[in-house]
Length: 405
Ligand code: ADP
Ligand code: MG
Image (cartoon, rainbow, N blue to C red; front, side, top):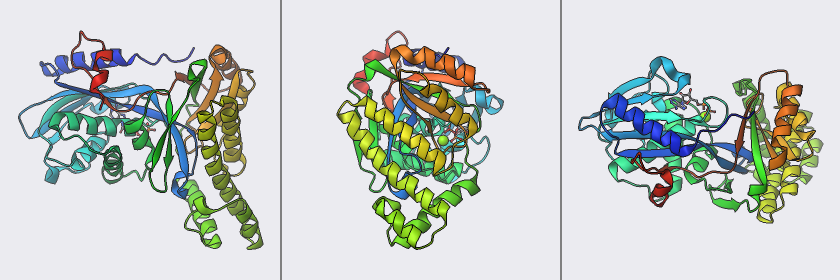
């Protein structure tokens, strides 16, 4: 069966209880930020194209309180980092330096990029976003931290874009990961039953409604094979894209069209460069078309575009793997599946499948039969972005919706 995603309110209550247990006081601030899955638009971000992610019901919650000192003491209750769960450091910007434990660098980066002085505080972190699975536990941690600091200091970002960009800088500067902008944008801006169309050229966004989403589900399947593209494989693909744009005299492949592929052939560009360019040019168009399909409530078309995206990533961009191809082809055997594709940079990590609600168990059964490894399943519907949560344990978190960040 699919992993049950813990109820958001249960995670909140657990975090509040844990804070009281660890610090002997009640938390006065509680916030959360979600992980994400990209539905379509892969390897388009560094080509100034579009991406179309949705926020997940898996969240990172931070509960805490000012401690009237100049230091913060934070405990992450994640199993994945059980060795060094406690960290203590000065919140003064001059003192902040990347170091050990590594997970605290994401928090330090947010404090360093926060627009005002951050007082000392105590906090616990509790997350249901799987760590390192490609569902962006890192952005969930950054955006939750930043949201926590907003509530703690009363310095709330006027623009959501600024908040997302500050969190991205935190990851660049303190964790040393040169990530794109998608993860932080969707973790900040996610809306229930919506995907987010993000233009990576000018960072404009559009909320895309999923009207009939109650008939469908997204099944996320973790191949449990490492999701990292090796940096040389990633650089080869990125450089091929930049080279193709240069030969075409364009700033990026965003400005190229399918006709330009012939120009590349006439210029005798190597075949792999033409293939990389073909993926990017067609994927940017597919992402725009996918958003338009959702706006017309056309989930069938959306599913077809997901399938085409995977096939292009497999054949032209060559970033799929035997494991991901097996997950995708198994899912597509089931009648109620509208589309299935790898999600993330490739070579491992997760697939995402759009499936009719009543067929989801059959998909899981077929994958279990066909997939030689051990897959993990998550069933999701588009969820909300970063928000404040109630600190009242007795209250259901529904009551705090009015407090949304
Ligand atoms: P992904 O974002 O795909 O999950 P990354 O490698 O980008 O994978 O980020 C994972 C890292 O983020 C972890 O190794 C850890 O340093 C940090 N992290 C994420 N969630 C938590 C958490 N709940 N507590 C502590 N660190 C976390
Ligand atoms: Mg990450």
